[in-house]
Amino acid sequence: MQPFIKHTGVAVPLLKDDINTDQVAPVQAMRALKPDYKALLFMRARQRDDGSEDPDFVLNKPQFRNPGILVTGNNFGAGSSREAAVWGMLANNIRVIVARSFADIYRENCLQNGLLPVVLAEADAQAFEKRVIEANGAAPFTVDLETQTISGPGGPDLTFEIAASDRTRLLEGLDDIGLTLKTDDDAKFDTEHVIDCTSLEPQITWGTDPSQVVGISDRVPDPASDPGRRVILEDALAYMGLNPGMALAGLPINRVFIGSCTNARLPDLQAAADTVRGRHVAEGVVAMVVPGSSSVKREAEAEGLDKVFRDAGFSWGESGCSMCAGGNGDRGEPGERIVSTTNRNFENRQGPGVRTHLASPATAAATAIAGRIADVRQLLGGRA
Image 1 (cartoon, rainbow, N blue to C red):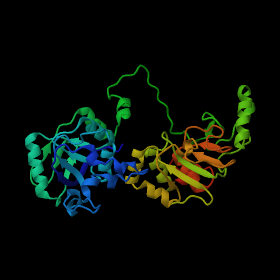
Image 2: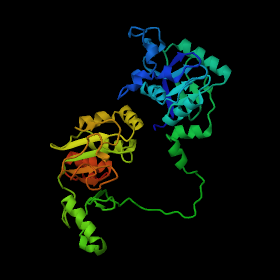
Image 3: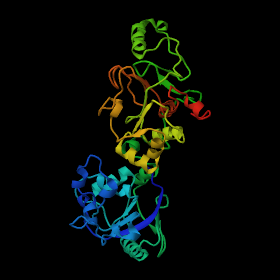
Image 4: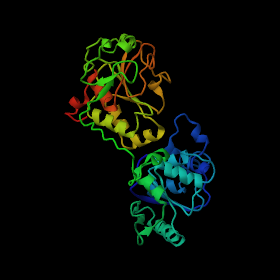
């Protein structure tokens, strides 16, 4: 998830108690195949019975149409555990909620998605609410998680408390899995192994097993060099339409797929976008990007990566398995050669007779631009 360090924005006063998740993200609106989380936020409250916009609702007022901080009352986020009630906030650039108190599940969902929940001491809460009302959207407030302060018009900086573990996960952008895997700074290990990968060139598979891999400048191995596995390797070469000693770099391809939950995370998409920015997919190549999760898709779109890919000639899809498993109708044609960032290249994995080469997002992106298996270092002038 996106780390939270500091956020500056207009503070919106919605000073009511017991606002529940169904009010925040109405369930009826979530039944769409592709919910518009920005429009979903307080959808019913924003509208009159006839469907027209209610000008009296605070987020419809001109000075609060671009919010950054929501200021509210007690027990905010009560009701069901509905993550859309957090996603709607983030889609509207609300990265901070200052409340008198939070429902426990909603607060946890905030922490899981990079939304900072703040509870001020009673006197400070009263003072801050007054300052927000008086500011009336004319000047922004800044919430700094590193210093645990809120600054802005109408008074001195206010401090807030937050558990050390919650502060760490937000500052470093760690969800529950990331927090679990984080190593303590003073951790001691029985044995430490240091592997220098600075000279390791981009890798790409040549066969029908993820272990059948070589460097991008290497050649297809000869099965005769491994008698114990010779038949397996010969079968792999036959399926892939390759011969021993062939170079993979320069081999024409039909499709490129940048996706999967393992290799279409935000850093993966950033690396691929850096490769294709200002360039265009080669003629005749079908190139797809499918973010690894809904949260990755939102974060990538917030950075404008979807536009980078579309401008370069890639399609930008909803998160899902897609071509990783030949799902949702996303598959290649028999005999097509595909470079994919997925983690499986078994026979027929991406469609009957489809030949899959696994590679990094940067290599896949460079290949889409070149129209053939390409060394990304050459495209980027030595940078991999």
